Amino acid sequence: MENKIPYKTYLNENEIPKQWYNLRADMKNKPAPLLNPGTLKPMTAEELSGVFCSELVKQELDNDTAYFDIPEEIQNFYKMYRPSPLVRAYCLENALGTPAKIYYKFEGNNTSGSHKLNSAIAQAYYAKKQGLKGVTTETGAGQWGTALSMACSYFGLDCRVYMVKVSYEQKPFRREVMRTYGASVTPSPSDTTNVGRKILAEHPGTTGSLGCAISEAVEAATSNEGYRYVLGSVLNQVLLHQSIIGLESKAAFEKIGVKPDVIIGCAGGGSNLGGLIAPFMGEKLRGENDYRIIAVEPASCPSFTRGKYAYDFCDTGMVCPLAKMYTLGSGFIPSPNHAGGLRYHGMSSTLSQLYDDKLMEAVSVEQTAVFEAATQFARVEGILPAPESSHAIRVAIDEALKCKETGEEKTIFFGLTGTGYFDMVAYQKYNDGEMTDYIPSDDDLAVGFAGLPKVDL
Ligand SMILES: *Cc1c(COP(=O)(O)O)cnc(C)c1O
Image (cartoon, rainbow, N blue to C red; front, side):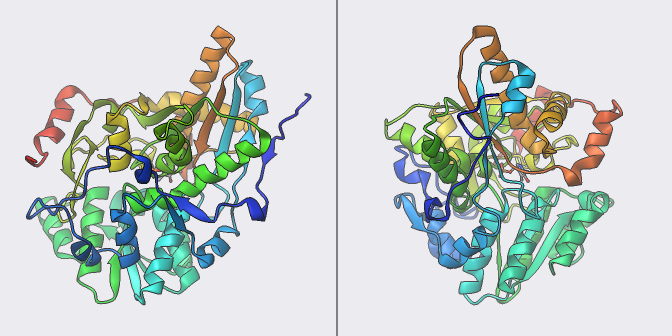
């Protein structure tokens, strides 16, 4: 192979971004504000400060400042595992026999195994700087809880994680990583909060949900002095921190003189995708460049492709502010898809607005097709991908195969958000031929939509 473009492109220390980019600054139609569920008025900084750290509240509400300096302490932590490589997938291209050029940005090179650490370390830093004792959060499959426990131990903060009970029982190794980093992990719903006790009384024997664990974590933060709640996706502040992925990618592409045509990412709450596309979408919004941008979601939890653009609750207990987003309704319970990180009922308000403005596309894919792509990728590129990330691989392969038909030499770029070492039960199901595809019927979705709050603005 005669390769002019290197297999991996890394940035030097002096090329690493020193600021995050706030995509909202370049959006003509700003994302809709969070609403107070009691008054239906936009949440004020003061109201949000009871739940989140003050500096993070500022970031959450700021739709105008384009760049935020990354504090030096966070830059130093990033150096442990960043910059992450931009990889040219020569082996995958060969295997597919496509004229397309495929690149991916790999975020799995840290112990937590995903991009979530990029925001966890920022949120822990601001909590520490504010003099807090600790933070609370929820975790589903465990990636966010793992990332946060790593970040908290680095800054000497207490970390209390409410873990969806079914995952707590089925993913004991994730739980032990968190405990090794000093976090306390409680299966949710639990009897340690009012909302947990209420849910347990109403649904005895329930194995929990993300929405329910969020309610418990918020209550634990607001009822304990010196604690705040942190969230690993969906929020504007999280997309801001994750912009490091896109900024590094863009700098690496410029270094090798390449411009991607198609950018693809998986979408759960939207944080990795929002971060990956940020500087590219910024150029698109400013009319400087054009890119095709594709969000990929599971057919079992199709927020973009079949959801409604409406104000909704972010949690089951309805204690959180309302967010306007593409949603399936906070009461929607997705079937047990193996990509735990993509099972959220809603989607980032920022991405929702961009999607509504037709600045990006979305597709949904079924999980057996996703694991087929994951396996194909693992065998030629070496990395065992997370099921979530493999949604993006599926669509990148599909796009590359289309190029094979048409002979187009497109440059396809996707986000490889993490590794799948803790997802071997899912791989086992696939290898044993026992994996099935669940697609909700319109009637299933109607149940979730019926629970949407009535908000007239
Ligand atoms: C959590 C997670 C996702 C989905 O979350 P987003 O906020 O949509 O990025 C994707 N990939 C991995 C590996 C994850 O852990």
